[in-house]
Length: 204
Image (cartoon, rainbow, N blue to C red):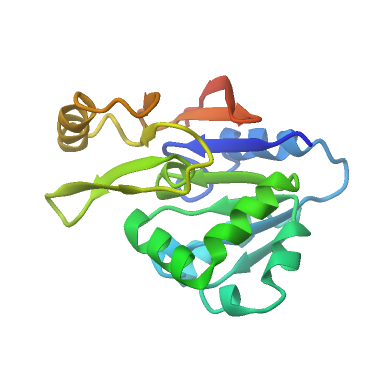
């Protein structure tokens, strides 16, 4: 079973129309028919406007979305395993992971990944796949917390932001737990079977 993860630092459908990185994601699937792509907006607390943008961007495919309430369904594993792609939105990474772990959705995603569902996400939705996260505790403080651990190491999105870059570099200087990826906006990583196979730059 070939496994894919696309980690998106910035850009995508939430910021631009016909985003190249979203086109790239759809091509990973290698299906000629419309792809079943599910959006998870937990990190933004299921923000309606964000979900609407997703549906507009992927209206030519077979889009759906999963809310926090959906995670409690006794059929959630079957629903997710039936998808071609899971696309995780940005927002508050710690909040998202807390909800996923409390509801068991973290295990659902991991199981789906090992059954061939493509995992993709932007910002928080990219950071979460790694073993260790370092991100905002509040507006001006950062802290370390555990990710899902599918990929080794850590991922810093929006590295071009000066405050984030300084905080992350200071933290990363003492880390020995695997590779550390630092990506500016519109830089993205494609992993195949947990191995980095491509770095994609996509600009408006």
